[in-house]
Length: 157
Image (cartoon, rainbow, N blue to C red; front, side, top):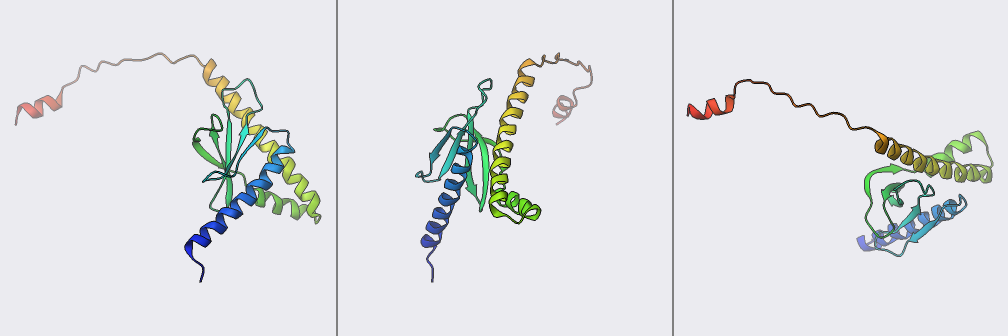
C-alpha cells in the first residue's frame, strides 16, 4: 500500500519533470527563463520580452496535472491575477490529428506555445497602454433632494 507522503513525492517529481520540459520548450523561443524548480512549490519564471511594459513576467507552474501561468512582477514575489491554462498536451493531440509524425507535432507545439506567450505579453502591453492613455471620465454628483427614509424610521422608534 502506497503512503500519502510517497504519493505526494511522486506528484512533486512529475511536476518538476513537466516543468523542465516546458523550460526547454521556452528557451527555444528566445525567452529569458529562470528555473525555480528546487523551491517548495516548483515553478518557472518567464521574463517579459517587451521592454515598453511594466509587466515583469509570468510564473509557469503545474496545478492539478495541468500547466498554467499567472502574472508575476519579478521572480521573487508571489503571482497575482487570474491563472491561464497552457494546455500543451491538448496542442500536441490536435497537431497529431493533422500529422502522424510526433516530431513535427512536437515542433508545432513548441512554436505555438511560444507564440501564445508572446501574444499574451503583447496584449498585456497594449491593454496597459490603453489604460494609461485613457482620459478619466468626468465625475457626476447627483443630488436627489429626496426624503431621508432612514432617519424618519429611526425617529419613529
